[in-house]
Image (cartoon, rainbow, N blue to C red):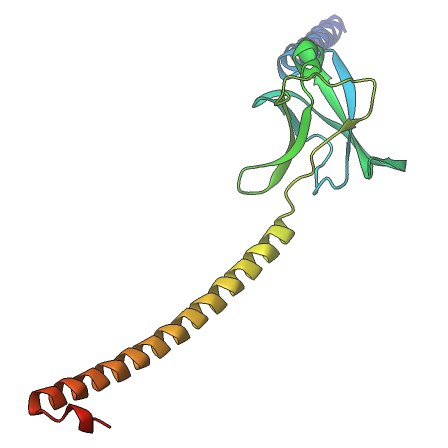
Length: 196
């Protein structure tokens, strides 16, 4: 019985030690990956988020500073924006983010993953964070493709018309050359007035 008790005690100690090690590891990795870091929230309004999802990265001048914590509709549109995106930003970047006012949805990589890009204002003005933040909507690839198709069709039509005009000019040039050749021939033979 004494041997069973000591085996159970050793197993229990190893179990507790494993739990302590697991908790320590979670806190260590969590602090490195940002799980345990303090954050603050910012709400940004968009007309269309183009498939932006919760958990998408938030970048400030290309540096990851947080993630998207919520995407939802608001009851009353503000400045024609009806989708509110809540950004969860690490506290250590608060002063840099407060100097910015350009919030836009960008596409990362060839797979089309969406992210929020924060950039300083172009003219040096600082945005009032007490008012609703208005974000720049993502480029609508479908509209872009349709516009590209229309442009392509216009170029094709222009090319066809240019080809037709070139053919007509070639015919006129050929006809004019024939007339000049006939005039030259008549000049040489001395019968210029009998050309026609």
